[in-house]
Amino acid sequence: MSEYNPYDNVVATIKTAANALGLKEHEYIGEIYPERELKVHFPVRMDDGSVRVFEGYRVQHNSLRGPYKGGIRYHQDVDENEVKALAAWMTFKCAVVNIPYGGAKGAVKVDPTELSFGELERLTRRFTAMILPLIGPDKDIPAPDVNTDARIMGWVMDTFSTFNGYAIPEVVTGKPLEVGGSLGRKEATGRGVFITTQEIAAKLGMPLSGSKIVVQGMGNVGSVAAQLLAGEGAKVIAVSDVSGGLYNENGFDVDDIVEQLSECRTLDKCNIPGAKKISNDELLALECDFLIPAALEGQIHAGNADSVKAKVIIEAANGPTTVEADAILEERGIIVVPDILANAGGVIVSYFEWVQNIQALFWDENEINDALYKALKAAIEEVYELHLEKDITLRTAAYVQAMKRLAAARRTRGIFP
Image (cartoon, rainbow, N blue to C red; front, side, top):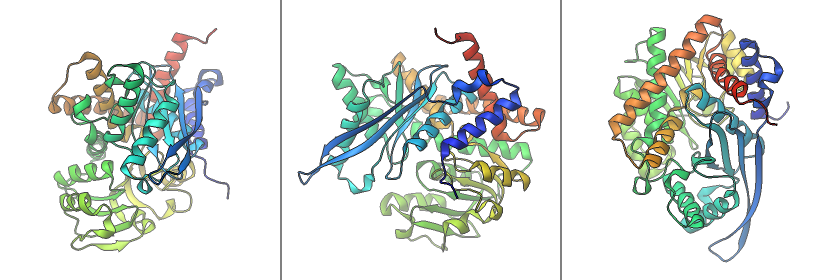
């Protein structure tokens, strides 16, 4: 079996959407290739005085509709193809929800749990210095991603500002409130997953109250989505993280799980009443109304798609379903709400944060949540209408909607020279 390449997934999906839209190759071929790829190696002094060299990336996929936008992730298994795929997904995510950004992504190949606080800060600042020529509030605006957070974005912002000699908060989003972060940003991706689930449930005539929910990944996104869904009366029957999964057919007290995780860090170290330990494969195969993969890419693939028993999959992670699995799920009548729509809440509120920084005028949390709901609901309506009109999957419909905007921008701007 050939090694999974997430970028091949992206290219296949782009071509499917382009065919559905009737585009000729010259109208979309530019979106198949990243505009710029930077690979860096940089030394970091460790606490014991030794020096380690780390590998990092910044990929800028597309700038047709505005500055590049995309997170920075720290993960020991990250590679160039993964970062390219993530950058491309950002391009289409921004286009489908109609915010004026292109897509980018950054990463460092590191297990951050092995670093001390000081080592993590030195790594972040040195990586920022290495990608400094590419980023900027009018060029490329990073944000948090897997294993990075507001604190790390604060270090990126400070490093960039120090090199320029004055504070430039708008160079990153998802940063602490004390240096220009936005209310609601931390919860935005999970809230967007909740809004998407709510809207799709209504369209399918599936009552949310009493529905069975399975959440793979209880990080920031999965935990926020689970809490909000439980607040609407949904029954969260299974959750998981890197340490494994837990199942309770009667549903969990999600607030209790989240509170415990803030102390014990991983589910296996928490004391969750009524929990039965299950594997990741068992979790994905549970009978449920909504399965929410909120972990990493490629979790649902050709090898396990036949065992999925969810009625609807809401992709909270980026690229959790492979192209091969998509075809199997479609044949089995399982609805997949694609990542570029379902998890777009984070980039929508990142856009709001950037606008607030530029204007030096901050909004209250109700304004932000209302604006998020309005933007995401509009995108869901457009995608769902295309899905019905063209009799295509929701993923293809989302890419068609995004491709319409990208193709229009390409026609308007032309090709230089």
